[in-house]
Image 1 (cartoon, helix red, strand yellow):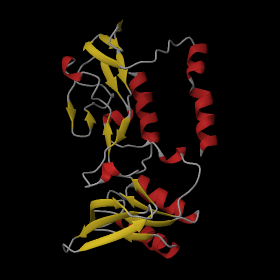
Image 2 (tube, helix red, strand yellow):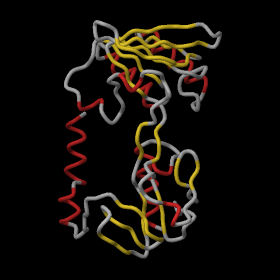
Image 3 (cartoon, one colour):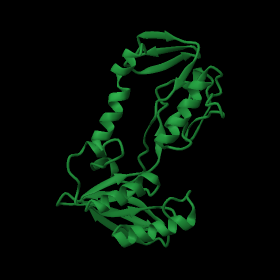
Length: 244
């Protein structure tokens, strides 16, 4: 995985952009108005048009005790050098399901927790049923209609996750590690979007079919739009935004 990431970085690193006569500025930007951004609170930069592609961060679910333990997300998991013996994955969307399948085949004992009735709830139901059967046969423990409520660290360092099922009964699962594959939050908090007139909704920035925001000269693409949190979609949206 790290090798693949490095190959991507080698092509799209800051050095690549500098060689392509693209000016790369490192810093935190926020809008002053529709044509001006303030970088790190000191430097002003103006432009006719902008593209916002600030991505997303993990949205941590309101589980009691979650901030008292060391949990994993997609942003931190691949920095670890060793796989755990066992893992609880909360969230069975594309990320959680894919990770469960992969880690199980690498020898990790996986428990997949989903608060809805099936995994991958937005996918074709017949295919989802087939996939659930395959994953179960391969050894993945799948628990649907189960909501995580409390998490705590055991004396031996393992994690205990207390859940409630659809009947109101408590279920507890134990593992060496916990992975949060829940929703992600658009990274817009530091941008000062209200001064631009850009409208947002609970998942991110609102755009039209041209990836144009409600501010005519500002476009947005990728996770910050909040439509589909997938890299292929972000790439496609970026092409549309740049073209327009």
